[in-house]
Length: 223
Ligand SMILES: [Mg+2]
Image (tube, rainbow, N blue to C red):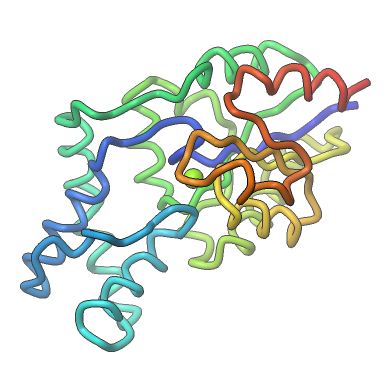
C-alpha cells in the first residue's frame, strides 16, 4: 500500500522561535498602532487568516475585513523572512529531517504539506532548513482560513499527483490537525512536540513523542 503524508509545519517539523509572532507584531504596530499584539495569544493549529482576524477581534473589538486580512498578510510575509534569518530560538524538531528523508527514499510514501501557513510563509520557514523542495505540494491558508478545507485541498492535490496512494495520513501537533484529518477522511498521527500534551491529542489514531516513532507506524500501515 502507498501512503500520502500531509505534514503540518509549526510544532511538528520546526519551531520558528517567535519569528512569526515578531513579524505580526510589527504589522499590527504599523497598521493598527497595537503593540505586542501576539502576547498571550495561542496560535497553535490556527491558519494565518484566522490568526489575523482573531487578533483584530482581540485588540480592536471587531472583525477584520477581507481586505485587512489580505493587507496584513502581504506585509507579514517579507517580515517573516527577515525574522526567520534572525531567530536564535529557531528549532528543528527531534528527528524531523531524518523522518522526512526516510519517507522520501521509500517508494510507498509521498510527501505533501497541510499547514495553516500561507504557501509563501511555509516556503520561508522550510527554506531555513532546506526542506521545502521535499514536499510535492500541499494545502495552505491560501486555500482557506478553515483548516478542514485546506487539509481537504492538500489531500486532493496530493492524490492528483500520486493517484496510487490508498491512504492519507495527516501529521500534526494540535487538536485542530486531528479535527481537520477527520473532516478529510484521513488518518492522523499526532506528535507531542508542539504545545499540546499526549492527553489533549488522544483522539488521534497514533500519538507519538517524536517523529523518530513514525517509521514504525509507516511499516505497520503498509503491512
Ligand atoms: Mg502545528
